[in-house]
Amino acid sequence: MKIEDDYKYYDKALTIAGSDSGGGAGIQADLKTFHEFKCYGASVVTAVTSQNTLGVYDIHEIPKKIIISQLDCVLGDIGFDAIKIGMLFSKDIIDIVTDKLLSYSCKNIVLDPVIFSKNNFKLIEDGALDKLKINLFPISDILTPNLPEAEIILGKKINSLNEMKYAAIELLSMGPKSVIIKGGHFHDSSVSPDCLAMRENSKVKILWLESNKIETKNSHGTGCTFSSAITAHLAKGFSVEESFRFAKKYISNSLLKGSLYKIGNGMGPVCHFQD
Image (cartoon, rainbow, N blue to C red; front, side):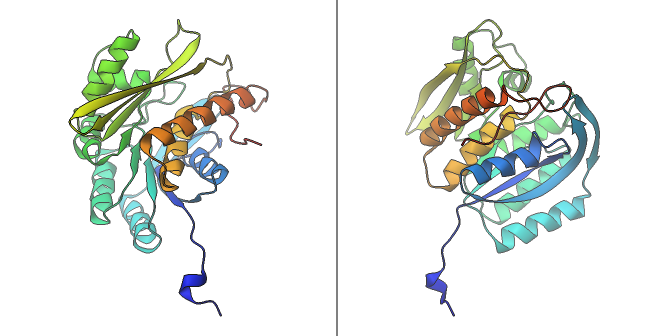
């Protein structure tokens, strides 16, 4: 019989998000990504969505007591090296998640502020975004909005790389330790620029990463996959900057490989397989 010190230990990552019945985004994409980086993945489901490559058709919010029970079960027993937060549909769910993350002293929290699906189906109720900013921004290690999400949060358009940089700094002032704005939505650019703003002592450090823009309709799950790749690398002990670099490379490869496949009749998913 093995004694305790003989056992190996997993790098463990948790996703708190909605379920995508089509398998391209949400918890399904998160768990696939964790697996690719050899992280033990667990999940807390906050909502069940009915969706496929053509769009989102319905949302069922999980009862609050079940969300509380899921969080207590996994956080109280397993514990995690990093946590990714995705779709939180309501103010009540945001309150619950905030309370549990603080109660269990969770670390390496990556917040992907999911507001709309790829086909513009709203994934957060009215008024909940303000609650998200007040509750979860200050306890997040990395905030990962895409360009439209950053515009909604800040209430203004972002039309240039310079404006994108200052938007990241403004989001940083709302409490998170670091912010990554994903610039793939710049329509007049041949590259996809992402901007990291992070606190470094009393200053703000800015890091830009660019990749060639890939022309593909298979981009479903891009944001979930990117933030989950960051989470997986944080769980494995990498720094924020290192995790950003790994995730940028992974999502670029996922888009490129996904462009070769056809699934369904609409916007297909990125390819999570790297080999």
